[in-house]
Length: 100
Image 1 (cartoon, helix red, strand yellow):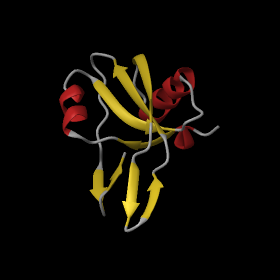
Image 2 (cartoon, one colour; image 1 turned 90 degrees about the vertical axis):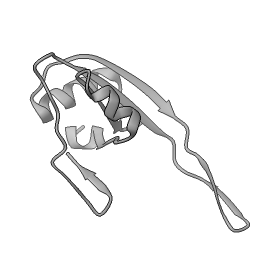
Image 3 (cartoon, helix red, strand yellow; image 1 turned 180 degrees about the horizontal axis):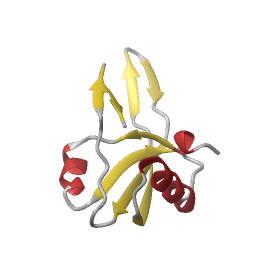
Image 4 (cartoon, rainbow, N blue to C red; image 1 turned 120 degrees about the vertical axis):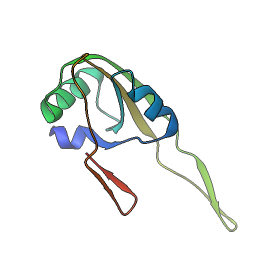
């Protein structure tokens, strides 16, 4: 599996920005990826030292469009704790989509 397939996109929210100050990065990852695969992908893509990885399976929200009900897909959140000297920066945001 390719590293670019495992790490899908960064999560930029108010809460994730507050945690980022403590050398922690939050991103969306492939649902079938485990902690070891996420650790290797982050270390290889960003050339940082990963200390710890936490994952959460997030349930997709229920959405309605008029009288039709639907559901967003489920996804996995990866919270990665980095070494004290390491940092991941987001290069640009274009059209509402984050780029790493």
